[in-house]
Length: 343
Image (cartoon, rainbow, N blue to C red; front, side, top):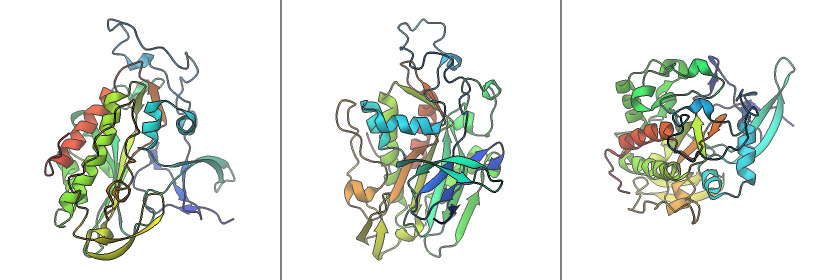
C-alpha cells in the first residue's frame, strides 16, 4: 500500500502556528491529523447535562459551565454516525462524509491518528476554496487564555474570519490569489470582503448563479442552527468550494462531491432556476445534502458548502448557538447582496 501524499488543495488547518499536514490516500480520501486532548474539561462533569429550567439561572450567559460533547473530533464524528436524533441526522448532511480513522507513521516514526474524510474537491481541475472560521469568540472550557483573545482582526465585528483562500481565474486558469492563515490574521474587514469578491469571480457570467448556490446552502446550515438546541460549536469553519473550470460553456464531465461521474451541458453557469430548497422542519425529512447542486437540482456547476472542524463542540444546555449564528448571518448577507434570495 502506497504512503499517503500531501493534499494539495488545503488552504487552512493550522495548529499552534504550524500548518497541519492534511494527506490524501490512493483511494482519494482525506486524512486529517487528529488533535488529541482537544477538550481538557471533557469527562470532568456530567456527560449530558439537562437543559436549564430557568432563564434566571446565574450560569445562563457563561460558557464556562458548558460541557464538551466529546473529547476530540473523532468522537464527534462517531457520535453523528450512530445518533438517531433528528438534529444529528440533519447535521450529517451538512458535514463531509466520514470514513473512520487511521494511523499514519510520520517522519520520526510516530504513529499519528488521522480522521478519514471524503475529498470535497474530488474531480475539480481548478478548485477555488475558502475556509471561513465562524464565531466572535473561539473560547471553550479549559482554554481560559482564549476567552478575551482576538486572533483575527475581523472576528468580533463580522463574527467570521478568513483562514485560507485560493482562487483561480475562470478564463485563463491562473492563480488570482492565495492567502494562508498567517496572512489572514491581519486582514481588515474591507480586505476580507475584497477576498470574497475575488472568490465570486465577478467578471464571469456565472458569478450571480455561483452566489445563489452558496446562499442556498448557507441557508440550509442557518436553518439547522436556528432549530437545534444541542450544540455550541467553537472554532468551527465553513468550507466553500467550486471548480473554476466549470464556469465556462460546453460539454464537460463533472463529478459530484461523492465522486460519482456525471456528464452535463454547461449553459452559462448554474442557473438556480428559482428552486431554492425550502428548509424542512425538525420533525420532517433531513435537509437537502449541502454538497452539490447537481444532486439537488440537476444543475451542472458543483458548488460545495460544508461545515467542518468539530474538535470543540459543547452541549448548548438548551440554548441557540448565537456565537455561530451571528457570523453565519453576516456571511449570508455578503453573498446574498446581489442575488436576494428570500426565505
